[in-house]
Image (cartoon, rainbow, N blue to C red):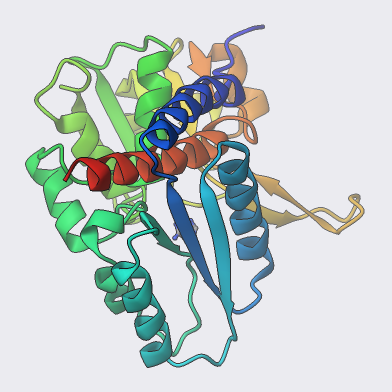
Length: 294
Ligand code: GUN
């Protein structure tokens, strides 16, 4: 049954567009520069940053990863970010979360120059998203979901959308994007969270469900209206004694049960994940284009 939204293919289309923009910038003598900052050796962060760095190099973006020791002070990290903010060859800065507990993530994200904040986490960029001011940066995962929906021709105008999860990285900015007064949005958005009542009822009304609360296989078949579009943002590691590593990654959607009744559905992996990287690359090139024209 082919109701899959192929995130890898759509991300591939976006990468081809981004690579063209990189070529165009290079003709003007500008090479987009992206710096990843990683603190400590969190295994998942190593994998994520490695994937992002590889893709940026494939696209002709000059990227490098700065790795700091787990015991690095917040002051030292802020000093490094200030150096990157001042370096005109660096157009994008990404500080990989999670940071060690002695470092305050809020302070760190707010110290990245808003013009280089390709993650879209700086309060200025969060505010610009809320105000629908297009000169900010949109956070990569919700922007990737928005792009997946638009490029899959899912009607958004007037659609009933339920977002599961109110996090700052996905749920809240996702709601802001779909609420915009724009033909590419104009949805009716319901944001459910851990204290919501009647989540199943909200979901059964939805034309589109975006699951981003981090609960393995939360969304069951009996919560889905037949024909609804299902987007699974979840990345959850669960025990799997039968696997070589003893665990595996699953999403927030009970995929096998939901796929047969969904209108369209993202596989996981291969749905939202590749789009997050595609949006990061696009944001980096956008940062370089803006720096070049300012
Ligand atoms: N950790 C998990 N997801 C993200 C992300 O999108 N950006 C950053 N900086 N860290 C993350």
